[in-house]
Image (cartoon, rainbow, N blue to C red; front, side, top):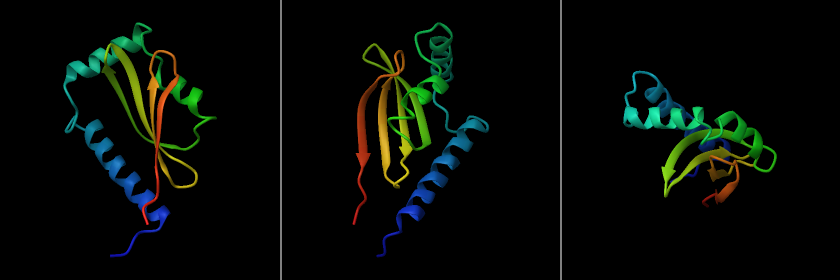
Length: 114
């Protein structure tokens, strides 16, 4: 068994993520409940949640990288963005961000396997 170099592994992850995102956007093939989408939209419109563009701008300097996936979740009475980034050095980072303030609540980096 051979391990793929970092850039190939990252490209595979990005391709898989883009494939899933395309399926969700096109025809709602993999989308969750439509009510969830509407609740999230109302939360942004009512000011309970910062728009994604603003949150990404807030975290960009401290956590540079290419955004691979974003989820908006409502857990324990709090809206959170879960953001997966591909860092410049090829590592994956997952951030949990308070969707109301843009504050990073948790950061997890996936280390390269050897």
